[in-house]
Length: 329
Image 1 (cartoon, rainbow, N blue to C red):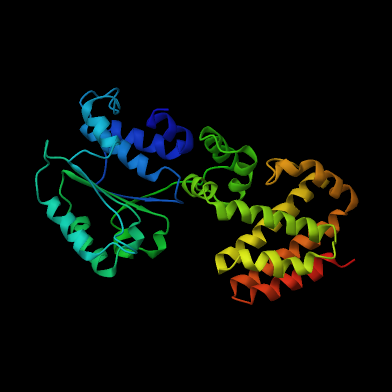
Image 2: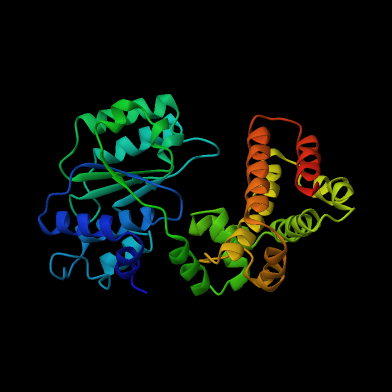
């Protein structure tokens, strides 16, 4: 699929906005693309950059086929310069090198484009160093700052960029994208309930730890909802050995929560995308045996347990208390 078609599909509002801006030749000197990872920010910046270097514009838009377009989209054009965190942060020296490029003419013309990934990770020194360009822009240089957390950027930087928000992909859209990548359909269904990011979902699908975690999480759900005697012991034998860190504890809760919500959807026949479609028949049997009120109460208990984990309450104690609550008559 051409990058233009993909961007129009996943970010129609942003695409149309920038398309009009390009046609009117009204691009500003600095943009802040804000939104979750995997929502198309980087590709959108590259597509806009291609419009500035394209040798065969089609209706004022990049042809995506000429040498310049191809090099921009493949991220090898000498006048499209990218920086990303060096380790955990973007350091002041990186920005100084970037500013040095600002002062130079383009290799193949006057135009230059700068793309700064994870801009929120700039150190205070790096952010302040960047301000000079944003305050006194070179007319032939355009900067794209990409971020997932604009609140972590200096207000002075925010005020000097045109902010464009990239909306999260809908579950159905994300599911379609994952299926295009030939991911297992049941696995994809679970992933779209755990993340809005295509990139994150793909990485999770390749993680053997996550595959095992999803199996353990569902097994724990089955033991609790069917009130099996071993559900309490299961925490010590299976949950805690596998889910060791705080973010993993939260995932364990989320896996159980999604399963309960699936049963509730089946119970009330309000099914859209189940997190565990492969177990639908099993969930239909469970749904017939439980009241909507009981399911809702269990879900509320799970949500309260999640809040405790967020407040750093001991995970094993939280899991054990939850198990006792949802398995009692």
